[in-house]
Length: 480
Image (cartoon, rainbow, N blue to C red; front, side, top):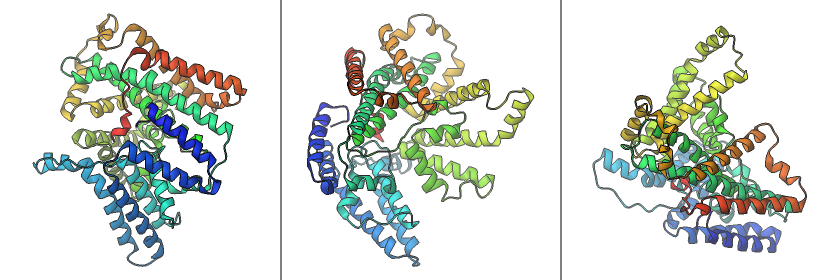
């Protein structure tokens, strides 16, 4: 039962009905029942692992808080985190360790739904209790709701207990404005998924499935489209999660903020998957010392943090290399900062000028795209070979004949994809300027707002993935 299936929205309609018919004080219990049902229907395997982790971290949180300043508090916290992370480590990286390092046969691991996301939630919950930022939840059922909350357990964003728990437990009255806003976000998520991500995926899958056949500018086109596909797909699942949650009056945090408008790799990671980036910063980079103990220690902390990011995204050398590559980008950017400042002064080019910002944004997009090629390739060796071909195979003629039409999309689909990307850029520009399109729509009269929403749905059905007969791709982040 995926977030783009009809079954999910039948389930959602039933949950909404029972939620708003329930007494306000018990609506959190309705959400817990719905979340448990969603988990059981969507993915019955591995529920006992999740249940065990919930009970373990619930008890650990209470004991950590009860210990106060006792000497064993730090040891208890460390052991609790270790036991919390261990199932994820085995499931996500066990076969890579067994096969590539220990040369042993692989194991058919049981994979609980959303383990990569809820593991980080549990660790942040224990860490915040340990640091005294929050009080441990004494009600096991309420703590289970925080972990199981069905709009975000599968694909994030990764909420902090202090941000989400209060909203889950207080119960919300029906609000037409909040409901409409949530519905608009769901529609926007479907637009991003079916009009951009799944269309771009047709070309991306074609090129990356035949790396020996498509080289040079084919890889460049596929790399650019994969960068767009990832962004649209990740943001689509986040927007749908936010929208579904908004129907209950519960707000989830933003997860993307125009990352390809970043002027540095560091700025990119402030804007890309912000809940994960913020988690890595607050619970790994800063506890390691951040940038407080000299440049060498700062760079080491960056390497460790981005290596962890790579490992979180997947097993294998390519994910680790991808994470380390982003660490190298940041280290290189920091180490050459003064040189770049002198160059700007020599060229009499103000750092905040439009030309300078445009050049820096283009540079960020290019370097990030190269890293995405390795991220998407079947292996590290294949990815490096594909990146190499971008620079060594000068087949620029593919932009001037019909070569790109042989990658799975006809010219009409290319027009639809291009126009959809233009809409995405326009909406992002409005958001950056502080005048989001969604806010403007919410200020329209009721009948105009819902009329435009229905028209958008029909447009997606005609021109989107369904319109051209492609099979809808599952969300990329569901695989992490």
